[in-house]
Structures are given as structure tokens and as C-alpha cells.
Length: 327
Image (tube, rainbow, N blue to C red; front, side, top):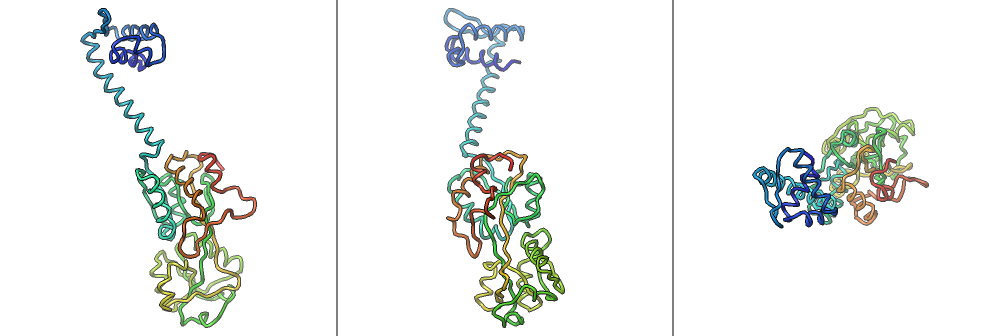
């Protein structure tokens, strides 16, 4: 069944004549007449009879008009829903993040996003950086905030911020009696790290490799509570995000140990799949992040900056200009 011919038939009946149907379709009246007659020939049925100025339907025409009404009502409804998607009146944003970022970055950003687009449903997924990169690659999440990793070539990253981790020890640890230590003094020291796949773990190990540091024992855990408890018992030291241990620092059960070479610095990226067009909610989220860069207060020492290095061209400005361009 030819839908254009069905539409011509439908409008002739609905508008009560060929002339008004032609006006709505923006074609000539003979063109509409020809379409309807061709439609009748294809069905081998008489659908419409012209009685004076009135349009009269055959029994087959009446039944077909009922179906056509349902079809074009649904088409109008579908157009309206698609318009809602374009205008961000409906839709879903699926976004992944690490636990730290879920705690310190996402509440402010998602609160502002939902204030601007209250009808967009947001689904937030949590995991370590490697898991979240995998979720974008598998298209389970459209965007994700992760610590900088070596990524699959299908994943593109946009720089968001720098993160600083400090060295933490028990007040009973020998480092706590010092004003400052060298990173190299961690040679032979028990060190507690986050689990494999964690961006902070990767950053710490890169720093260890850079300075040729070989801890005596490396203990791995995905549990922040375990790491805090283990360090408090003076079983080892760890690099941690300072806001995570603010209570322990205030109580004096943990101490930050200054490092001559500086704290562990790594980057926070927003990632997306290069082969998937970004949805209107994802585009709107990225534009909002760019507009709010540096304006949203982030607890602790997480701080947005304009670029990783001079000449960097992977900023959010590119996404703002062309959200589906591969970079």
C-alpha cells in the first residue's frame, strides 16, 4: 500500500474535498485526484464517489478511512514525541562515573542538569575507570567520567579536571614525625593501592615507575573503608583523595605526609564512543559542562583547568561546535 496515496485519500475525506486536500499537501488539485484514482486502481476497489460537491465513501472507503485515521494520528503523535526529544522534553542520559567522582563531581553537575532539563531521565552508573571505559565501549553508557587511562581507539576523551592524591599515614608511622619525605623513601615500604582498573592506582604506579620505587608489599582493595582502616592500624601507607578522609584528619587518626616531589596528579576525562552519534541529552550535558567550567565549586583539591598542555585541542569546545565529530 502506497502511503502517499493513502494520505491523499485520507485528506480528501478529512477535509471534505480535493481542493482543500491539495492545499494541505501543497500540490495541485489534479495531482491529488490522480493519486486517489491510482490508489483505487491498485486496490481494485472504488473508495470515493463525488456527489455534487460532497465526497461520499463506499463501504470499503469507510473502513479504510478508519484505519488511515489511526495511522496518521499515530504519525502525528510520533512527530510530537520526536519533537520532544529534540527540544529535550523527554529522553534519557546514561552516564558512568567512578565512586570518587560520583561523590564529589556528579551531584553538582547532575543537579544543575536536571534543573535545566527536568524531563530528562538520568541513569548514573558507578565503577572503576576501566569498568566505565568498557561500559562506553559496549554502549551501555553514553558518557563517563574517568581517570586518564590508555583507551581503545574507538573511545574519545575530553579533558575535564586535574585530581590530586596525597600520601597518608598513621600518626604512629615514622613518616608522621617528618616535615617532608622523598618519594624514593617509599622503597621497601608497604603500600596500599586501589584495585586493578582504578585510575588512581594507575597514576600511583606510573609515578613509582618514574622514580624506580619498589614497595615491599602492595596490598590491593576496592574498599575505601578497608584502606582507611589498614592505614590507621599503621600497617602501611596509601595515596588518597583528601576529602575522603577529612573526618580522620580532623580527629588526628590519619596524617597527610608532604612529598618533596609533589603529590600524585592525574587527569579526569569525559569519554564517549567515537562511532556513536551523541543523543540530544548527551550533547546538552557536554555543553552545560563547558559553560560551567570552573564555576561549580568542587570539594577538596579537584580543580578544572583549561587544557592539559599548551596546544591541546581535545577540550570541550570541539564537542560544543560539533558534538558528533570524531577527534
